[in-house]
Image (cartoon, rainbow, N blue to C red; front, side, top):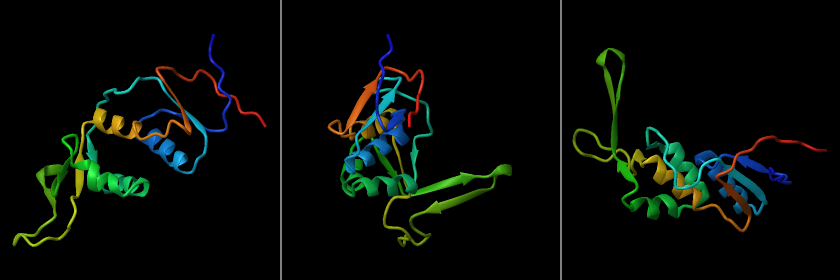
Length: 145
């Protein structure tokens, strides 16, 4: 028999978008349900890059995340990158110039295995505010009123 959940807010999926939404709702003390078909930790194929947009969102959640928690072995920072364009041309984006003078004082991006990043965010969900349901899927959604 399927479980019927009565809630004003239901987040379907606890990947980076769903977990981040749940974390922010928790900070605002808005009760909600978050559902994911998988159990955590789970692995997904991904490019594993965490760009400056991701860093900005994490800083909005808590300034200490990137400064302190990204220093473990699950996260690697990069001070430069190379974009390979069609026909072999490339564009370099580096944190320092040819004279080793700093252009940026923070990493350009980080990398992390998707399973590590997803679990990292999932574990930050406030379970006093969020009703977390993993290993189950949504069959139907009904809106009343």
